[in-house]
Image (tube, rainbow, N blue to C red; front, side, top):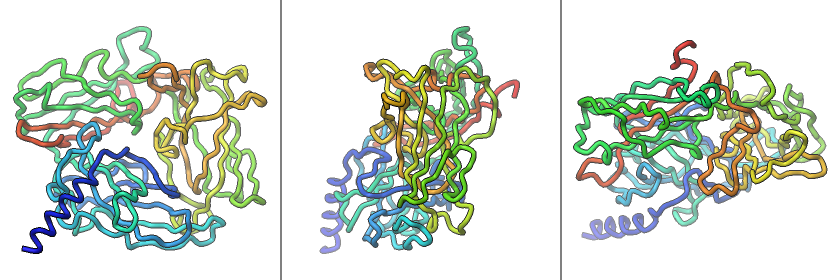
Length: 426
């Protein structure tokens, strides 16, 4: 009887804490948060339901002393709002676990404690498909959140066939990419597809310009065809820029100079010009990902050092963009267009500047502009890099389904297509 009432109390307490929390948010002095499918830093953290799939979690606490971190999972709907279920409904085993694997940094000027884990632990496994937030917190108190990170659990019930085409619109033919796809929902058998089936389309793992709330143009039996001319249009942009920061002793091709007398080191990248006048040239890029790696040590997780990295963007004529903000975009800024990614205009030099505290590794990034007067304006690279339909981009399609008696959006299909591999002529 005591055990029964204890479980009720814990369930009520956890439901109280399961409120809407911003995804991919950081609340403490923590850097270099990486959550990815095991052994692949350039991947989304995706688990197949009831499988042996694992994710790797890595992060550094820059306070430099050991803390008592724990984690839990929060089930979310397709729009990343809390699903409103008890953790006992979607977690098999313990609802929270302690992070017990950590080590102090070595060979680095910056002192930090590195934490890592393989998730999910056997005693704490998601039991339903859907969007999830990994919530890491201090001292067993979910009100002391350290950070949140998105991941996905998919129950593959819907197959997706997709291809990337050029738009028919002459004004967009050379600058945009159009995604069309077909979903086979035979195993779902929805009664009202427009309401029960939800689709989210994402370009290069960005969440600021996703396409959602689209409906199939045609329904043929169990096949739903999403091929509207205006539904899934994306500006193509250009290949991402890069910065090789695997060594702070030797300057790579994109590094202008390194101040090694400073602690931490100061790394100044070469100024990035507007690339619109430059002819498009294909080269393999990371599509916004960054990879922690070092050239002069063994372990990038424990021996990688930090530096203040200075980014400089040079606008045309050294004049600021009227009515627009400039953002540094990529995994290095969590692909978010907030204050941590917004660049400041230096009127004396006529350039936009941003300094980030980054760990050694190989980074890919781009510059985006966004109209700060337009409430629903989307950021793009049309005024920094230009748009070229030949650009290699990755598109991820998420399919969600809610049954008539369901209480959350199930994730029933994920696929990623590449604009050079899934397009006629390449």
